[in-house]
Amino acid sequence: MTIKDVKEILGAKVVCCEDNLYKEVHTACGADMMSDVLAFVKDQSVLLTGLCNLQTIRTAEMMDIICIVFVRGKKPDEVMIQLAEENGIVLLTTGHRMFSACGMLYEKGLRGGAPYV
Amino acid sequence: MCNQIHLTYVVSGEDFTRAGEASSDVKAKLKQMGVSPESVRKVAIAMYEGEINMVIHANGGTIDVEIDPNEIRMTLKDEGPGIPDIDLAMQAGYSTAPDLVRSLGFGAGMGLPNMKKYSDYMEIQSEVGVGTTVFMKVIF
Image (cartoon, rainbow over all chains, first blue to last red; front, side, top):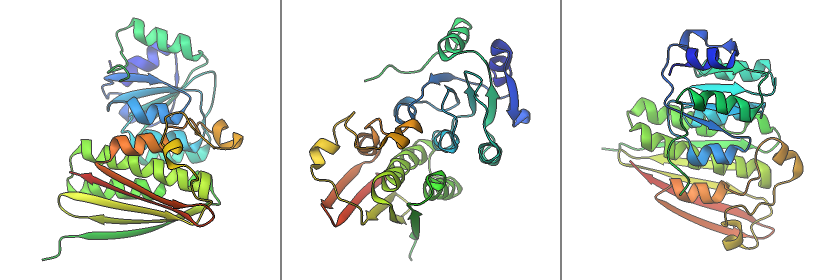
């Protein structure tokens, strides 16, 4: 699915990098601990998180994550938006909680990649 | 003919929001050099975890990077409190991170294990009260 599909499935709002909505998302990760993200994520991924600080964007940049969905109504600040824009990372926000948001995407076929070894 | 790139970064311990800038810069340079995306990601994660550790635990430090056509060597040096028990620190899930850091999504105790996982060689030297030096190598 594309980032645009993710946005529509979740009824999410686009915060920045609208030009990149066409990009394909291959896997997803729902996490609130950055080390979990760093250990397991594949590329062309979407990250769902309630963790709303600059290091979330930095972690996504390290991992080549192409889209971050902030759940539970969390909103990124200007500094975060700027860093995301520099790296072409689409930021979305949704009022859905983590479990529901992940479930809605899973239902439409998005998967999490390799299991933990 | 010298085909080596040498970079030095000073990591500030004052500002947690700036943590990751050095790793981001190295990642950008490796991408420019045409290093494979998989190798770039390994370096980015290993160095980023090391850089964050330096800010969280040691009030910053310096990172020295040497890039050859086939590998990168990173030396992360701080003058922080040192690690009393390196084997314990290497255990997944073990963390001494303060609460503020945990509220920012760190302190899961996966930093050192992730650094070992993503580098091809890693060595830690540390002395309590003096500081810590982490050396990592990633082969492209």
